[in-house]
Length: 132
Image 1 (cartoon, rainbow, N blue to C red):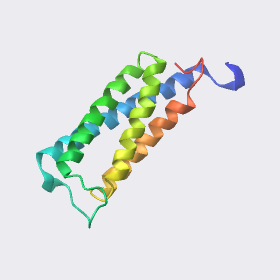
Image 2 (image 1 turned 30 degrees about the vertical axis):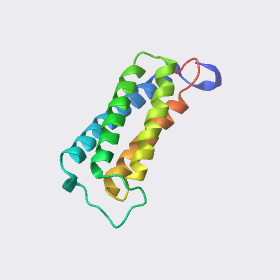
Image 3 (image 1 turned 90 degrees about the horizontal axis):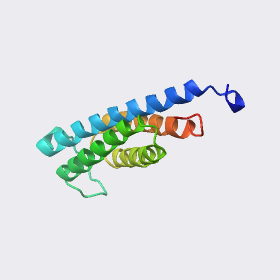
Image 4 (image 1 turned 90 degrees about the vertical axis):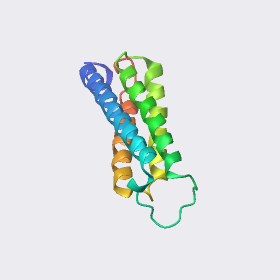
């Protein structure tokens, strides 16, 4: 057993779970972005919104962020500390983007925020020499 009673296998499992969640968030972000780019009508606009981006712009934001998170999730399998840091930063970016798009898709954004926050927690929780 490692210091503090933690098991090294559990830390590695947490990192693998975070990577899988990041790949899922990335794939869903790509899908979300492609749908918004293809047809603005697929999103329901609720009232007025402070951030005046067109839905096509939001689509490109989600598409690019989703692709980056997917790649960072794949990079986590290498065990790189840089991949972990990029994973945290990029997943936080996706969570923030989904927070901003809440008025357009409240349920979908809430699901994406939940998955993203769980992935970030797993990446932060499993740090140290036994994490990878």
